[in-house]
Length: 579
Image (tube, rainbow, N blue to C red):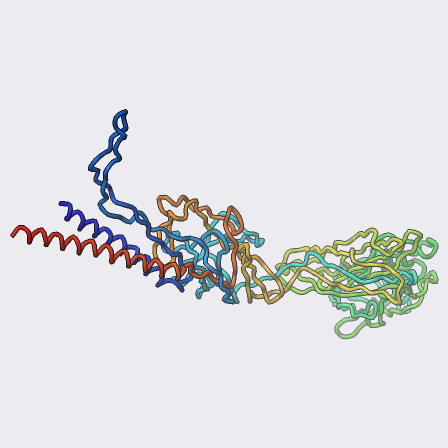
């Protein structure tokens, strides 16, 4: 009976060492497998046969220890070594490695699996997938490109297909406004010929119908007829203004026409300022920031008074307001109004133009003029005028405000720094509100004034042409228009007991009864590691250790087989003794 038991004891040694050889062989076979985790086989003795349970000591006897013999060994467990492997750069942006704890989350056939193998790629639908086609999961983004934490979804990187545009919200302006310049004075003044009414020969007023308007030199012939379409063209500061059209109806009045001139020439009619001449009742008197188009009470002419500053100087020819056939009802001339105010815009001013974008990515041009309005012991005040021909109404003027500088030439305060561009009937959000930032501006003595836009946060349409993945797992897309937007975030899962995971093969694991539930979070949170893009984790197999285990296991196997062969010889001897 004892020899038979020895045979089974030797057999258990063969089985356990064979198991270890299998584990070592698998480790060596996967020495170059990405993110492979090695295993080790642990043995324990089988149950023991107790031949003598032992006796306690007494006054006459020192006691006896138990006498037991074992019946061989069994495999106690085969454990995974989840220590991290070395990280090797690959240069491929979709290759990901985890530096620290955690597992990538993938899904296939509604089964959630976990892996350390980050050799991912993009499929034909621009989805991030494993080499086996499992979907890599993470957190998506909302309509404002903000990460939506907690809700896992398949990650998509739409290279070449996703387009974007962004409305301008902020514009930064820089430069220096010459503090030694001359305060602006005078304005552009243009008047028509003397006018009268066809109906009664009286001087026209704001409510006079345009069809009742005639030159004083030819009072019986109307200057304007119903149905005609007139085009207004001109220049401001030497820059061509966009053409504006005016269609004459039966109810069109002189006031309607004057409002059209205000709008089409981009004349600002509101704002603070100081009258340059005594108040003489003439509505056309140029006032800083408050110029107008009106009937000159003394001459019965339509008088156009522009805003202050050389860069606001208007240029109007006699044919600046005409029909498609070239008929011009008014003879605009520059000179003086009925009170002797001459056409003479002078003073320090500067103009710049820049491009902004509406919500559809449509480029819009804004013209900005700065005029030295006043000087004081506390500093200088400049008035800002903003216009745009891309405003969908006929009003070129967008807004006016002031920038005030202190004695050191630094910005003290500013007003009117938000401009609104109407985008009616374009499909874009309207109005487009843009904030102007003058905080980097100065007003110091210089040879001339400089004003330039250095930054704006809008963009035209662009397509996604590149992306990157940060240490926090956030996928950032780079668009051809210069925009960068968040596309999603790679999620990681950690477990209270990683040894409890069940290996499904293919570098994939699933939750086991003793692993605990997966704790899913962003990288670098809740104990998870960071993401290394363009790199892969190598196998953590230690070949030198595996070769030693190979020698030990093979030696143990040989020794166990020797026990069996020895027992066999003894049994043979026993059988021979009975003959």
